[in-house]
Length: 206
Ligand SMILES: [Zn+2]
Image (cartoon, rainbow, N blue to C red; front, top):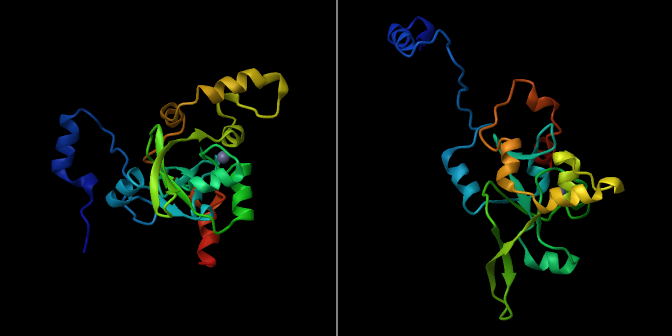
């Protein structure tokens, strides 16, 4: 089938004249391999997706993404945090801790979500042995802020400790996504190949 050349398509050219532009604009054809479908977006926004961290796309700036949306990731298991004596934390980037997790516990799944909330769901084993979920406040991972140098956050420079502590305390996910657009991300032709994309590695051993 021959496609119409829309640049020569008179009704569209009339329309361009009407809205007062000579520009053709920019559009990206939908490709389900790189663009989230409507149902994937709603899954990510609602209950999230459970997967191994190595299957998360790592963008060239080290933030985490699923297809064309940035995501955050956390271990959705209350007992994990109790066992490791950690406060429940979410990651925004491939930080030292997430790399450590992938190296030490490659089978450990994380929940990825686009949801911006105060509380996130954690699996909880009740005293009866029943598994349920409980909402829990999570904090941002400071190693992620460090790897991104978010607002000059530096976890090792003593001189800036007070400043960095304030950046951590005042952190807001909503503000973070103003810096790092959450969705939709647009990829140039070359961006897929030079990014440290863990998903391509992951596919081989699945
Ligand atoms: Zn992190």
